[in-house]
Figure 1: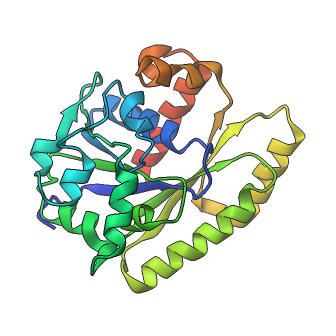
Figure 2: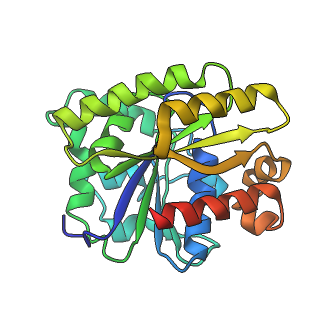
Amino acid sequence: MKGDPMTKILAVANQKGGVGKTTTVINLGASIAVHDKEVLVIDLDPQANATSGLGSTEADSCGIHSFISGENSLEECVVSTEIEGLSLIRGARHLAGTEIELASQDEREFFLAEALSTSDLSNYDYVLIDCPPSLGLLTINALVAADGVLLTVQSEYYALEGLSHLIETIKRIKAHWNKRLKIFGVVLTMYDKRLKLSREVEEEADKFLGKALFSTRIPRNVRLSEAPSHGKPVILYDAYSSGAKSYMSLAREVLSR
């Protein structure tokens, strides 16, 4: 890889939707950047919510599609955000078509890894990839390109069942295509300590995951849900909210790993 080997590439993944994946990419990215680090967010989800949540518009050109296909370089595709040190490669809805196009190509699992390995990443401390809520080709591309996976798990009944399926997939990808891939950490989202269910899921997760589980819990928080509609990370929308504080705490944990 041309980029600095110190650059950490993390895919933020879960095959389920609505588990706080994009919220984590936006707010963890912003919180790490506030700690004087350079962060690049790659929006690989056809819903392009990380793009709009960071105050940007969908890419018609020079977005993730043209970066993966080699039409445009990293430098041409990167746009800045309101947070100093936080940059973005924008997503777009036509990425769903990219997944279909990739399906017929040779070495189709390696397109993103190839694009990143021929780019200079030395300006970035962290690259965070927002994966689609599925285990399709786009997510596989992210996992093949990443050093580690950050898993978001909602504090609800079937959460851990889905997690074991995802961990199996990660093991398969590690065996076939990306020997360096490991689980970087797991974060519990939408946590409400008043609810018995949240506490039970936490207990199970603790048993099942051990040290992989971050000690920060991301709470259910109104300000956290409102921030994307204003195109801002929560630290710009309401820095004193419990959501903003929890992502700052998660950023410190990520930086210490």
